[in-house]
Length: 292
Ligand SMILES: Cc1cc2nc3c(=O)[nH]c(=O)nc-3n(C[C@H](O)[C@H](O)[C@H](O)COP(=O)(O)OP(=O)(O)OC[C@H]3O[C@@H](n4cnc5c(N)ncnc54)[C@H](O)[C@@H]3O)c2cc1C
Image 1 (tube, rainbow, N blue to C red):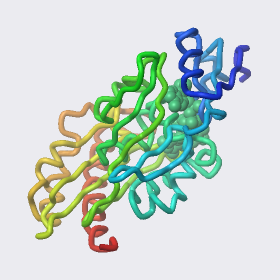
Image 2 (cartoon, rainbow, N blue to C red; image 1 turned 30 degrees about the horizontal axis):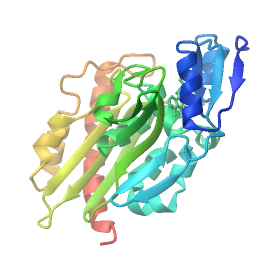
Image 3 (cartoon, rainbow, N blue to C red; image 1 turned 45 degrees about the vertical axis):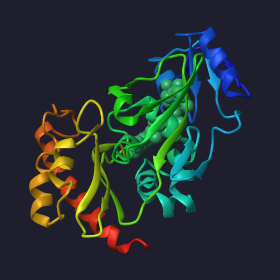
Image 4 (tube, rainbow, N blue to C red; image 1 turned 60 degrees about the vertical axis):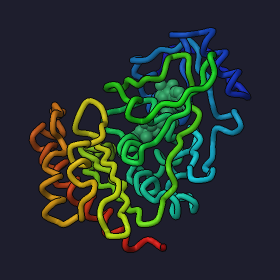
């Protein structure tokens, strides 16, 4: 349980970190909270020659509003998101999701950026970021690029970020009038990771019809996804319990469900349908409770 030996640096800027990454492609790893990387290193499943600690880089940690957008630094911890007063008002789905992650120690140390890049198929953040239609800002030697969350997750522990790139920020829409949110998760009891997690962000129009909706799903497949078949059935309609239930049956359409010692595939699908319906119902009710 002792990692192989490695060199360690703590750069003071994003550019310095990117330079170090570029100079050691394949041999270097970025270190954020270390809650996913260090266990892998201790098991010697990952053996970087160089660890690049991001914690001394100013500006990578924090939550701010920029016009209609919420901007979260990649190094912001789960706890900072969970307890943010700004997010409680402007994007409560994020506080709810953060609260569902692991335990207090994990939330105090783990970061939103580390979790997204690690891309565990049972991680919580991807469901919320997908449901909200988030965008990821990525810096590399060639400059900055933006990637929609829907293009980011490619497979288990695999994302569209290059080994020489660094995720700097997550951009999300701030809550509008008549917006509602919910995250429903069945946790694996030992770790807290999602056996199934369904996040919903929706907005009603003045006549209480569903103007827009995002349904993000984690835990059930080898990568998180947007349940478009559910969204398309609800957009433009009043969210009656009957329609919600009928639409939610399509949450796993086209998905090959994961099977492991925690849950069978058909059980995961069943829970996903149930939780999709509950999360949509809860998000719709939430619109009525939000201050106008
Ligand atoms: C006991 C336990 C329980 C947990 N329970 C849950 C849970 O219920 N739900 C859940 O979602 N997660 C859970 N986790 C995982 C936790 O959320 C981790 O914090 C998270 O997956 C990784 O974040 P980190 O900051 O620790 O990243 P690290 O471990 O430091 O890094 C993870 C990976 O991302 C890369 N990386 C980190 N930051 C960046 C960046 N800015 N740009 C590019 N690459 C980067 C690293 O190089 C590494 O490959 C649990 C972890 C533990 C140990």
